[in-house]
Length: 123
Image (cartoon, rainbow, N blue to C red; front, side, top):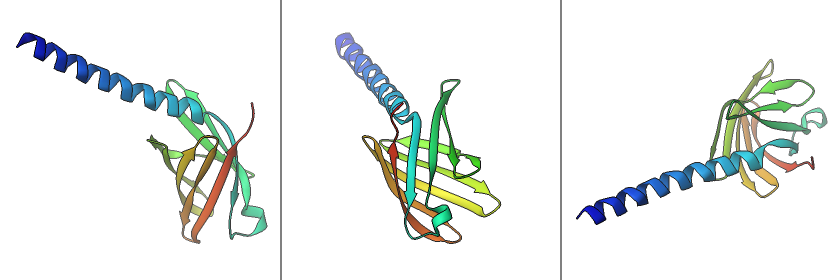
């Protein structure tokens, strides 16, 4: 009976450790500069950069499209990255999926819903 209990405890501990390591790997893999392109918007809004950094054991980020806007409520879960930015033009909600060195997804704003793709830049 004790063996079964210890086995269960070990299994739970390994699962928690595995999930923590996967989240750390995703965060480390995300850190860096990503150049993005947005479809179906005026030329001055089509490109910019995502900048992801590790600060105090937490992933933070910025969107740089001429001015640097902080990513609010940045969340990463199983390759899905979501965040919001705010500036004088309004609120923009990003929903992206990471596949290797590419982020693909959508931006939703008061101006519409737009496709976006970003590619990680070499260090």
